[in-house]
Image 1 (tube, helix red, strand yellow):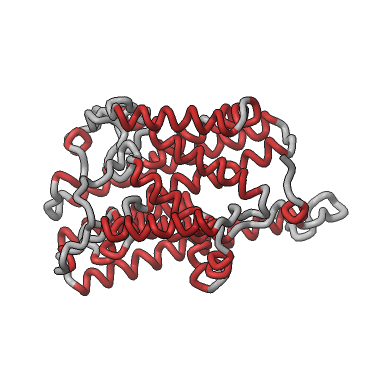
Image 2 (cartoon, rainbow, N blue to C red; image 1 turned 180 degrees about the vertical axis):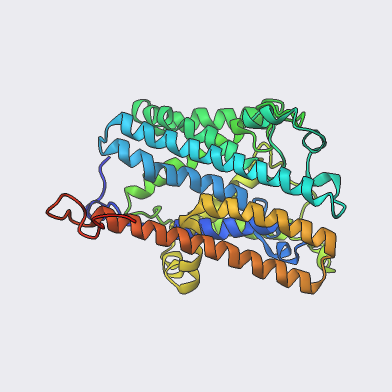
Length: 389
């Protein structure tokens, strides 16, 4: 099915809703990983079954289609697109290893000066480097450092996924993907091995692939409707009602000293296997955002553009946020979680993330300017210096 005329006229228009939503998710992930932070009482996980991790993976699938699926569609050389995917996977792996090294080194050094609870680092990693090769081969995934490996696995499968979508069609691919997800929910033992956890990967790739593929298919569908999902009042109302139920059921009423208003008694939906309640929660939220003109307007505001700035540089912000989490937890654990420390940690953390985002934005702008600059008569770009000191 071809793109609509309006979409064809603007194939490269960037959807700031996606960037803004991803930016909000990144900030919430950062806050959620600091247990002592009072701000994590106001994040997504307190008002619904899903949390920012589901948003991150869904948008990873959406962005992967925009970055690589459309490149395949435009008949770019297959080897070129595969090389781009390979470079991105390598970049994700390098950032993962940097975070692991910094976290392990920091905690070991910190322990020489202040006591650190054992839950800051798995005991196997705390008492020696014998298991370092397991970390390098992604057989051991430390806590809070387990979402990038999932992203690597899912991205490595993008090219075969694209071939299947073009070969057997979207319904068949979604049906098989859903069947694998359902099988994992029926038998959670189906998982990748994790040397640090007998239950396997915290984000079971066999389950979370369904959310990633839904993101890919959502991007394909939106691409046929000028970048938005088709709006249905009935579906929007259904999503809204579900999110209201999710809020009432998930809100920590008793933590706020309020009467428990939960309508039913149920266990917290399992995150490892992406339980159905969590899946429906993030899909309902995403549909309301990506089908709403109001969300487009909101993303264009100053606050929306700030969130989009974070979202455009998701890998760098996620990495910086993970390290901010580490030092924030150490500071709050060692020096108390009073209001002064709360303000210092949160303000300093936000400033660091903003600095990273703005620097990456400037670097991207400079790179684009260099590519766009016409060559000088001598063969160099017009702005290029003739010599370097």
